[in-house]
Length: 94
Image: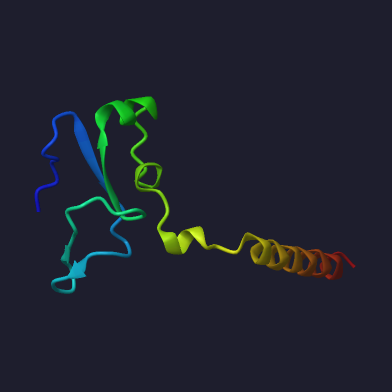
């Protein structure tokens, strides 16, 4: 696969951990078009604006599945776990 963009002054960022097609156990064939949450061609000017931080998530964004994350449920679970930790620590200290 050619990782260079056809555009000059551009870089391609790919979050390939969930998409693409496995050809064999070690080789994943990647898609070539921009896809939200997966890959994006980004002008180098944009990379410079972000101080050359090369974390793919800054450029590819979240997939539609990730956008549906239930933060309220996660906060309830976090509160439950924090209470369990406090109770466990109280038993250890006595």
